[in-house]
Length: 117
Image (cartoon, rainbow, N blue to C red):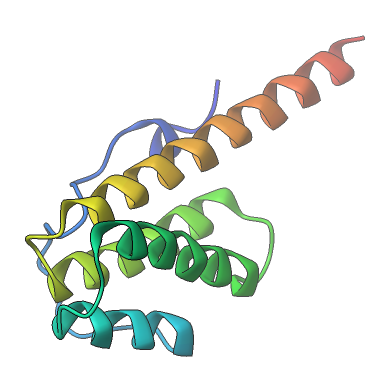
């Protein structure tokens, strides 16, 4: 079984008490600025969110899934906070979190079956 921290669902993006951005990624900052100015339609928001999160995941050091999930959650919160009425941003963040969890569970299960063989 995967660690409980990966299975339990956290608060939805946009909820949470922390203030300030811990995101140094320029792509994320550009997207936040465009969201605040309402310069993007829904499709552009979705594509921009996925590209920004891909960049964040790529720049996350190590292969620790809990760390990757926390980074994606933190960026997702900032993106949703920038434009709370744009629902596609939160939807894409949740979808990516689901994919990361699912991939980790698949990796963990294949590792267990290889170790048990």
